[in-house]
Length: 498
Image (cartoon, rainbow, N blue to C red; front, side, top):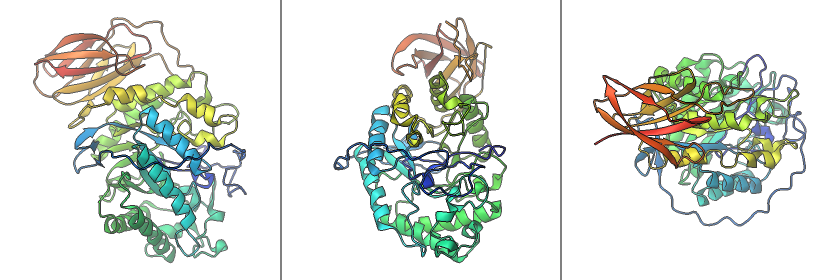
């Protein structure tokens, strides 16, 4: 989140969609919720939802876990890199459509902000039954597609009585609606009546949903540092209380997270033992999303020694209908998105993609809507193909250097390395590409002592086609690799030569 423009948008993994909860961004010009569930910049349009179909019976799929000390989720016991999305929509039928796209696109995980279909509670904290049933239908539809979900219980703008996008006036717990809260900060005041009501509501949902096998984790709150007046000690105390309730309610002991907007320094928040994995939201002002992902993920890993999830991300935090236009709708933005997805693979993060506008939130913007979302329908599929069946156990970011013509990164362990490098001149806003890059070299510092390695170079257009192979030899701790001729970018897998 950029504090200067104070604008940014919410997080999802099967998350979302009434815009009262859809946006994680704060808009300076809007301090109250509009009559519709959309921010003032997003006029509600009569989007014809796809015809809802009956929800098929859930198909068997492997259990995903996050074991203590691991830095990746384990699928059927093997640590794996997964692709994820943020979904949005007015109706459950639109979620169904987006879940179908998620399945065919290669993502396995969706983050969902629960307030997108309404806040889900009365002014006394009782669960809205109709609202809960909608989410249960969405969870089941996700399960039928073999997709995991991470519910997000709270979002900052529902508790924002300051600048930026706000739905505080429509929050049932606001005293103007018969609730007990005079100010939003009461949610984060230890043992306050408002906090007790909200935590009880959250616990009721977890007790109700904990048997849903495709729930991968719980996110307590999105961007807690955006709530006006809330301090880091208050936020930590709130997360501790919520986590304690989650542990009591969830017999499956799923991991727990909470997220911060990407500004300021609340380092104690993420060091808190109640947070099982870091949850970042990169929206770089420069638009250099791939570079930001690699730098931020590696910084977080070094600082906190916890797994890092990309909760949401984008080329710009501003609405995609902004004037002048943002990088989100730039002519060659698809190149920047492709680079960001591949950068996540080699960053050390648990996941990749996790886009905001492109995954689903663009559905609220008449000029974009589904055609824009479908443009990115399978953007992650080559990366998904590339990492399929790769065991990420003990993978860590590797130190590397490269010729000036290329830029990228690598991750790996003593037996295998994954790398991705691109044309170093391909930067926003135009993402221009040289016709061909030749004789570019990179040098990796690789753990272990194995001398000879085989390297296979892959087309990033498919993630499966090998363009060439080579044998490389370690010198000390370093291995120097000459890349084959390529345009745009190239990926590789390197194995011990036995």
